[in-house]
Amino acid sequence: MLEDLKGGAIDLLIGTHALIEDKVEFGNLGLAVIDEQHRFGVEQRAKLWRKNDPPPHVLVMTATPIPRTLAMTLYGDLQLSVIDELPKNRKPILTYHYSQRAWPEVYPFVRKQIQAGRQVFVVFPLIEESEALDLQNLMEGYEGFSRDFPEPYYHISLVHGRMDSAEKNREMERFATGKTQLLLATSVIEVGIDIPNASVIIIENAERFGLSQLHQLRGRVGRGSEQSYCILLSGDKLTAESRRRLQAMVETNNGFELADFDLKLRGPGDMSGTRQSGMMDFRLIDLAKDEKIISYCREIAQNLLREDPTLEKDENREIRLHLDEIAKFRVDYLQIS
View 1: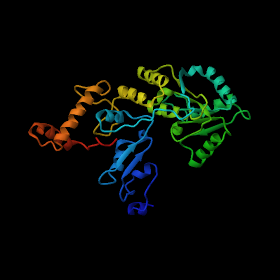
View 2: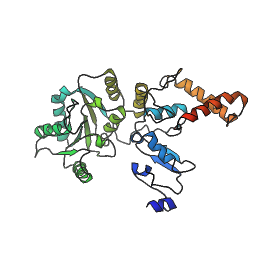
View 3: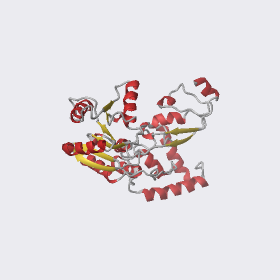
View 4: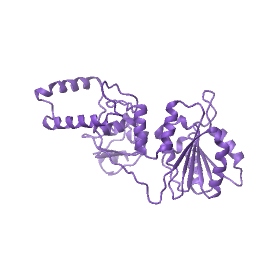
């Protein structure tokens, strides 16, 4: 396959992160489509960019843009297309945030959903108990659910990252075909799972997950015509940032609104480096607040480059010298979306 790819015999190649490995060489790569963009780092996306000269066109796709990507759209380095409508007959997911002490009220709701023929995801931050972290874990959760939802009346699937592919596929297949009503898992189920009959996802210790991850996990439900629910359970001792993050999940299903909130909360990272979040050291502007100023400056910069693409004019000499100086000290990731 590698020989055929390099020789140009393969027109379309579909794969995982394996495609960024050095041994994967293209005869003439014209377009790189990166799905679930938030699962890749800047350096990883840059490797695809460098697999052809000239670099390929790039289309990145995600329900939850990372702060750096959102900042790039403000700068004008990315053209943006938004799908903001649900497929036909889909209903917005209702999201609620409760303390973990609310489990006695959650259990009857879960039973009611199962009795109505629906299925339920329960997501845990850890597989097993940790001495360092006081968090809910999958194995203890499995024991508890097995007591409260006993066989033969209920059936439970279990999925986590330490299972081999065959085991995971077998458990997922049982859930997908309706042989089990509950799927207990870690965040391995974040993407690539489409089970229209699943109407509830419960996320334990939701404060331990980032906004992008929470939104992706929520997207495991709401894929059918029935009303779906996302229940976020957290500890009582929340930081102000965690509380704001969970409240944002309750208030909106819009991935771009969440990404905008994430940008304000975590910062855009390093536009010409590899950090995908974190505050930038601007002296005068705030990317989250000064969008109009940035848009105005971008328009001025684009006009200047149209008139003087190589910045050769005397009045643009200082700009060119400044850009040349920056280029000496860092790898330029400005065009890596």
